[in-house]
Length: 164
Image (cartoon, rainbow, N blue to C red):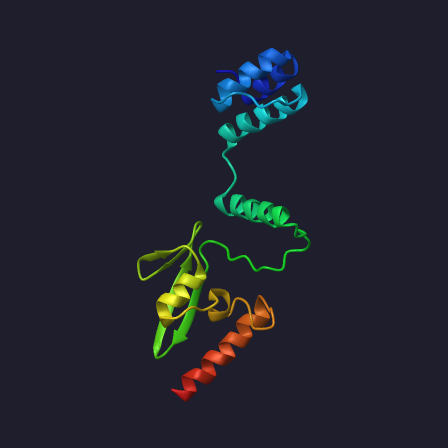
């Protein structure tokens, strides 16, 4: 099989009908009605994706969120949400028990159980609906995120532990 570089170079020499045939080959679907330039870009993306791997799940999820915000008419603006990296361990002391949650690529794991959101984890712990980021101190009541929220959560946990 030709190298990726050779495949990408060959796209520039293809006619529109050859590009449509190449689209069918790499996507296994009928080509959309696009200009030859856009067909080349789409085919090149797919070839590179196959060679180097696709987007990480977290990036694809963020792109989906951005598309939904745009469809609602919201602006994308600066990111205000805190993103948790896979492998991060969140710890929360609640009603005399310490809970440890591991952040995964597609969700959260606590005591061997998988959860799709941090709010579901908080609900499993408390038995009632909570904002998961707020419960774990990732996002404070005033929208605080990061170190300030973590510091606030530690103080609140310490106060709660002393009251118990």
